[in-house]
Each structure stands twice: as structure tokens, then as C-alpha cells.
Picture (cartoon, rainbow, N blue to C red):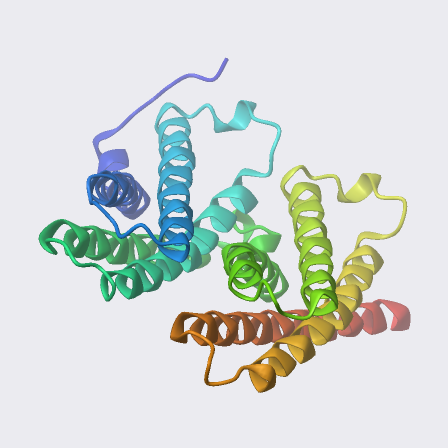
Length: 291
């Protein structure tokens, strides 16, 4: 059992302050958002649930990390702590930025009183700044205190996971809006996104659990294979997205066009992340091949 030794400087460190701000702002955001009455539209309800889930999830996991850091029990957890904290910080920044944009977009269709929704959007924006600050603090630490997720390939894998998470509510709403659309396009896109999300989660579990040495294949080849599959699947999904844009006509509702364009943008960003990640993986394999 570790000995708990707390000093005054522990409560004034940058990490303590930003994590405290993260807990307070996420709690404020979902509390204010939960008290707002929304228009009873399907897309509004889907994205509201998505925003609430993101705020609640990161409030819970950040509070847990904050408590474990204070009582210094994180050494008892069988995970890579430096990779876990970096993953939560960067993914939290990306997801809370996304919820800030989505929630602000939802306000354009809101007919009720605006003070509480606007306050929730501001709290979400502050959460994004807090997670961004934590990411910068963690990246500026000494080299031995940084893990794989602090490197460029690690950050690219977080972006890939972010893209997969953001695609989920968009696909749900696009399927609902394009109920008369081409079924094979929706099916192929859904399968492609699902496989990539699964690969991202497997990669994350292997890295956070320090299971790289137990893989049947060398870890660098394992990552290169996943990156190649991700490039191919997202390339296919992105082509389908542009095809759906060309198939949209003036009779479609504006919300349908906005959803398809958002899917295309996120799919393109994720494809770029997979492509750059594949380039890093190939370079690593070539460098090791010369040794």
C-alpha cells in the first residue's frame, strides 16, 4: 500500500488546477443542458443525448483520474498511467470541442429561453480549453514521463478514435433522414466505420494495458496492418460520402444536407489521420529493417 504524502504544492500544480476546472465545467455543462427544454425533433434528441453522454463520461473519468492522482493510488492500477492521462486529455479536448460546436448549432433551432443553453455552451467551451491545457502540460513533461500516446503516431490514433465516435450519431441521423436512400451505401459505410472503431478500441486497449509484448505479431506490424485497413475502409467511406453529396437534390431538407456534409468532413479528416499514421508505420518498419 503506497504512503500518501500530500504537499501544498500538489494543490497548486498546473495539472491539479486544469483537472479541477475540467470536473467543474463538465458538471456545469451537463447540469445546465439537462434543465433545458428542447424541440421534439429526432436529430435534436440524438445530438442532445450524444452531448450529454460526452460531458457525463468525461466528468466521470476525469474525476476518477483526479482522485487517483491526489491519493497516489494510480500505481496500483494495471494500466499505463501516462498513456491513459494523455489519451483522456487529448480525446477530451477533441470531443468537448465537438460538443461545443454541435450544441451551439442546436441553439440555432432552439425556440425557448437562451440563458441556460448559452451558459452550457460556454461551459463546454471552457472544458475544451481545460483539456487542451492539460494536453500541453503533459506533452511538455520530461521525456521519461511521456508515453506512446504523447508521440505523433499516438496522437493520430486518438484522432482516429475521435473520428469514429463523431461518425456514430451522424450515421444514425443520416440513416433516418435518408430512409429512401441507397441501402448499399449506408450498409457499406456503416460496416467500414464499425470495423475502424473496433480496430481503434483494440489498439487503445493494447497500448493502455501494456499488452504489446503479448501480441502474436510484432506490435509495429500490428499497427501498420490496422492503419492500412483503416486507410482502405475510410477511403471507401469518403468516396461514398461524396457520392451522397452529389445525389442530394433541392427537395431534401437542409438538415439532411448539413448532416451529409458533416459526415464527409469528419470522414476526410479521419482518412488523413490514417494515411499519415500509415506513413509513420511504414517509415518505422523500414528503419528497423535496416538495423
